[in-house]
Image (cartoon, rainbow over all chains, first blue to last red; front, side, top):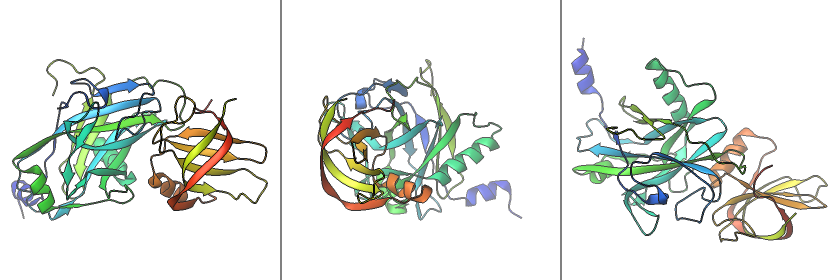
Length: 220
Length: 98
């Protein structure tokens, strides 16, 4: 019989760590702002809902240098706990600020990273959240996403070489999402804290963290 | 009520132009028409009826939303892929739902 340590050592390993955003200015979000509500504004490349009342959801993350032991390929998972009358859409992963309020996309496997809504990821996040003794509050749900093909219609798995090449000696990046009304109305979204789940399609590693509307000193 | 011309790419529709009931078209707008009309990169739902047509924003972002609607609703959408050029005059423009 294997010890707990041996079992853990046998598991495939992929590690992703949340941190504060790295690149102020993308989509007109200042530094250390994770949640911000905007009225309709001018078009910005890659911005999905600039013509609607929308709430930005943004965090930074780090993929530390790692061996990716036991991993042949995987898709990244993310889920956000949002209100039931909101939907969330994903932007690519940004590794720098570009022109104006635009971001510069991280490429993996020769293409920008895209996401597709994935109900299974939302369900997985809900179950894992419950395992920690917490419940999704009434009126909220986990909107889940997997990395996707460029047309955002099917799940895409990155192979080990693609992942190793992108991570290199360690990678930091920003992830942006935008929540909007499922039925667009002329009403601002009152900002609220958002719990994020990060995981993947292969390993048991996952993390939950909360994006506060106002980031406290010393956070993260 | 403001009336405008809608110009974009038709990506889906539900119902038939040959019946008397309303049918719906989904149009991707590719240029900026604000403040008189819709925004660049927005997706509109256009309800066509014999006496009038109305257009409003929907929060969709692409074909994925049509795929999902096709799984969840009846009658099914006709997905138009690749999209076709779309031009419709005299459309009542109500960007947000009341």
